[in-house]
Length: 121
Image 1 (cartoon, rainbow, N blue to C red):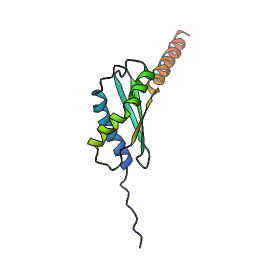
Image 2 (cartoon, rainbow, N blue to C red; image 1 turned 90 degrees about the vertical axis):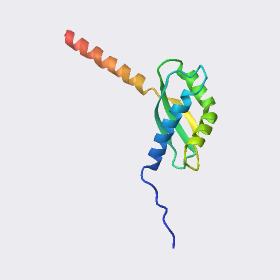
Image 3 (tube, rainbow, N blue to C red; image 1 turned 120 degrees about the vertical axis):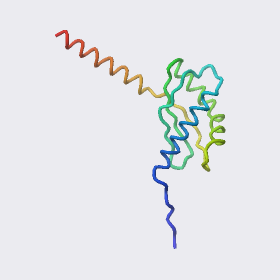
Image 4 (tube, rainbow, N blue to C red; image 1 turned 135 degrees about the horizontal axis):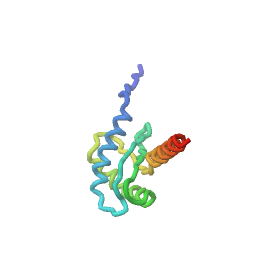
């Protein structure tokens, strides 16, 4: 008789959330000057927990340099996660700059400009 493995509901979301919180603490400890004021927006974990894509935004600094620095520090950050997380497989980290906040600001400016033009007419 085969037993079905019971999956824990929303486990991958909870793991991704925990990774996001722990990474935020670990990134603050980094001394690399290329890493500015980073905000982690989201973490997406593959179903097998082998890889995690980390989306970040940046308040000050060059996004491309920061992304390079974070990806270079990914091994160190993964090791820090390994010490903090209670899971069997700690994912390989892949950092990606998230342009969502930039796009939102651009859209807001366009809407504001359109409303100002309409008010003139």
